[in-house]
Structure formats: C-alpha cells, structure tokens
Figure 1 (cartoon, rainbow, N blue to C red):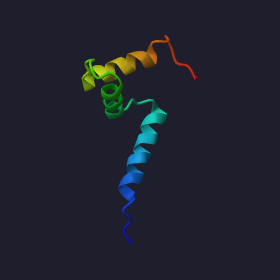
Figure 2: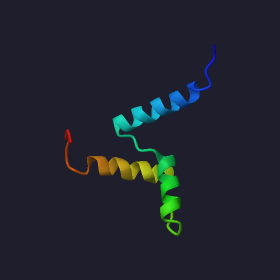
Figure 3: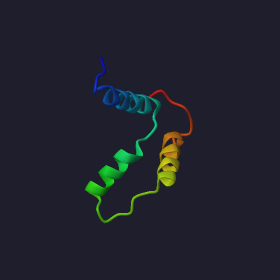
Figure 4: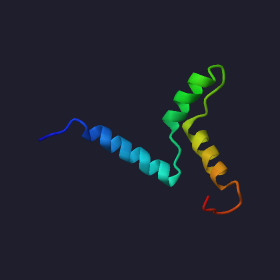
Length: 65
C-alpha cells in the first residue's frame, strides 16, 4: 500500500532536522522577505548562509541557550 503522504512526511522531517541543527531555510527567508520587504534586495543564497553562520557564532563561543 502506497501512501501519498510520504513526500510531505519526508519534507517535514528534513525541515525539523535542519531546524534542530540550526540550519537556516533560505526558501522560507525569501518568501518572508518578499512578502514583508518588497522594495528591499534579497540576499543571494551564499550571502544568506554566510550571514546566518556569522550570526550563529557571533556570541564568541559555544553556548547551550
């Protein structure tokens, strides 16, 4: 028996894993940015991930919270 819900389940599982690991979602960023800031320029995928990585480690060290 084949369930049509498997692709959605896999997508949500991957999204959850990325959020747990702190990996930012570029597509969600673009959708939000275009909806909320229509006149501003969207960062490229590379610039977005560089900025997110810098923000993650900006505190100067590892932390639990």
